[in-house]
Length: 393
Ligand SMILES: *Cc1c(COP(=O)(O)O)cnc(C)c1O
Image (cartoon, rainbow, N blue to C red; front, side, top):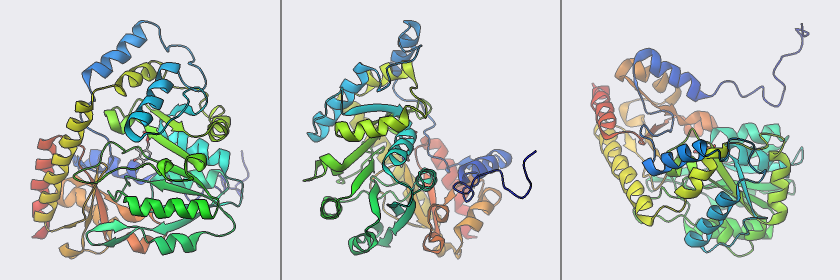
């Protein structure tokens, strides 16, 4: 037996209980609610990509440990994708690393680059693994709050600048941004880049929604800005782009020094993963542009459906320029606390959403906001909307 005086879970992780997704998904199951909480699509990705995985598995490709940095075919496809879309040139042999999803890439990057006591700046509300990974690396997280303004969540560049201290090691930037649906503008990104260069900071960018930008929004990788290629670890993933979130194939691109550092941590986390799926993702990345366009259009239409439905149900809905998610303000419904609201929503309306407050250090900043996922079939969204219409009465 362990001493009862000492908790089992160590101090670094003590503040992170089970994730809100576990609680809310269990609630969805128990109440038979429509789950617009967790962000995974309810339809699988392209048939030919799935077939490519089956083929690899049957042909015995990837059934044993693949190479540590990832199979050459996938590394080449990732480099070609970065070149084709963004004009970023990476050597597949020294500047690309395949990981177990973006999740491992984030963890490995932080474990590799952060020294205990280093400060890491992240935009809040943040993706739920960031805080835990910074903590596991012994870093100190410094949140910079995205604040509502002109119908979207915006970065206050002065606030970001003020957050940088002599102990700041890196900026952890996510755009398109989960949970707010904000896509940082070229101007915002240029300012972040200038700051990183001026203060000699490393930057880790989470770009898993790079293909999910709508209307006239544009995804611009931070690595494309002057002085940034040498200090940026860029992270991508097949999960969101190809609707195979269970495959967990992600990647890192950066200079040989950065990629080697990240790999030093990665090799002791999973070493390698997803052998046959790596072959399939290599093919997926080479899909014609029409796939990406159709995928984006499909999600845009779903965003519009859900945004209109939530508005009609009485929420005030923020503009989403990218990702799977819409953020809604519950105050027009006479509510103020998203956590209470979301816990009651399955019983009140048979729908599950996520209170955004849990993604903040400054919880009060996110109190009246809730996040809905729209990466679901149209009939599912319509049914959810119908159910939510009763909230006003
Ligand atoms: C889904 C998600 C991830 C995790 O990606 P995986 O490839 O599934 O590990 C990372 N960051 C953000 C912002 C996400 O939404």
